[in-house]
Length: 125
Figure 1 (tube, rainbow, N blue to C red):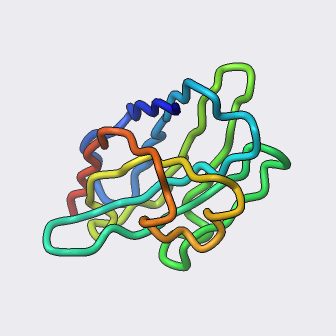
Figure 2: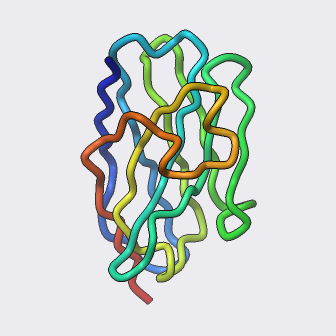
Figure 3: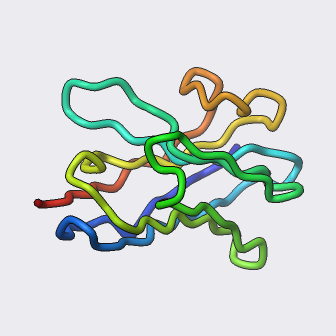
């Protein structure tokens, strides 16, 4: 089983930065895809960024490309989401999720088996 715990959310003004962390425990480092999703009120959950535990290949949603960076620290079993140039439309609850590497490529929420509890990010204009 895999356990995920997010931290680092908060409130920031437009143009500011935040870094989210996701601590990962359990049987994760046997080729998994770790991803960040977000969901705001009245909207569907959307994939923001993903990384493969083997090879560290990343991919991003078009809405965050060039502003967000996902990375991993294998020694700490932690993945990060560095968010720069934040916009009010980035306001959402952000979730860390894990899927088998063969299933996570397109960042469909239904392909991910494990989820964290979420952390709130609020960007004011």
